[in-house]
Length: 219
Image (cartoon, rainbow, N blue to C red; front, top):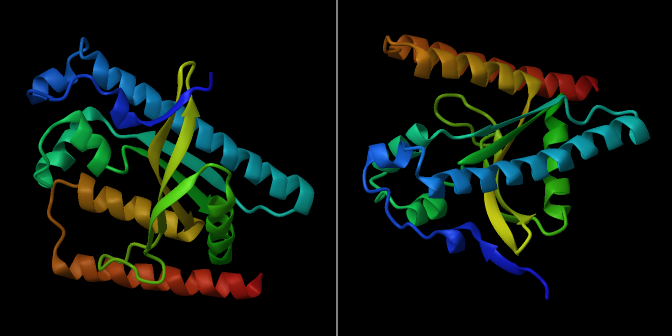
């Protein structure tokens, strides 16, 4: 008998967080199981991108991918995001509405590499692209540029196959440099950034956009 194909929410037995503290308790095995599933999904996808990276390097003598980063959101981050969006604190709501619990970032040398990677993702067997956001053609007001995809990836457990949502971000080295510094300044700083500083960050993002275009032409 073949394993059943399910989504993560089908595994949930405990419906409510009850409260913030219970969600963080060690004995709350439901949350632990869910994070285990997301971790497996991230490893599966990371392996696919590592293979892709090495394939292009060995077969085509081309560095399509510079590096790969992965992360799983903390329970505190998940709950804060749900509360901010006024989403009732249930595991089912968490899985259905928070698409970036598991995330992978692909950083490539040139802007043209982004198109190659996103097209290859669409061709990955059994991986479903369910949402895309093009912040490169249409950057955020802050100046942020990146290409985002939400995908569902199958993971294979002993008794069932489960589809898990993962956010993929694809950006150039220059975009990544800007985004990392901007995040530290804007979200980690205790002092509020004023309009003059915000404008300066947007101008820097525009310069990076021009630099990316020039580097693509040179290559």
